[in-house]
Length: 169
Picture 1 (cartoon, rainbow, N blue to C red):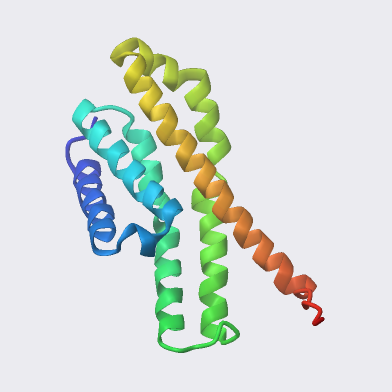
Picture 2 (tube, helix red, strand yellow; picture 1 turned 90 degrees about the horizontal axis):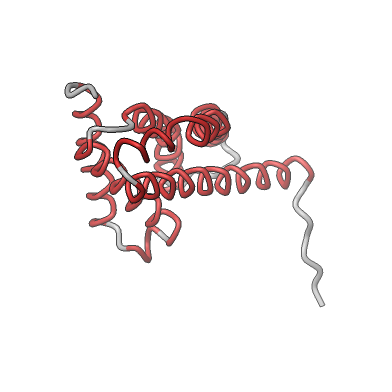
């Protein structure tokens, strides 16, 4: 367990998640972002306290790379730009590609290593409750990333295929 940079970044990131959660109420964040923020914070706190699974935490932090595009995109929309502008499209594409590369693509490998090696090792060294807690954290992460990516794919399909127009009665 490296006590220097990864621990520092974990502290900064947990601070960001908790500040985000405390400044934006759950009704603004929505239930999925609230679960994401709280479970990620709990995961990092428990990991740092127990001095375990730093590889997974580093991966989870790297996942936030796509947030740069998401936040920049939101700033563009908040400033009044349309989603059809070139800057908005560039940021949307950047968000989609980076989300896939850093959040979705690694999931099968993370799950494989968790099931085949790490969960058993964690259980043997730290007990059932710790192994179960991190299994829940991983399941939340995998589920949310997969769900959010499916929404992005659905939106792209609608854009490419043309959104069906509702019939007026």
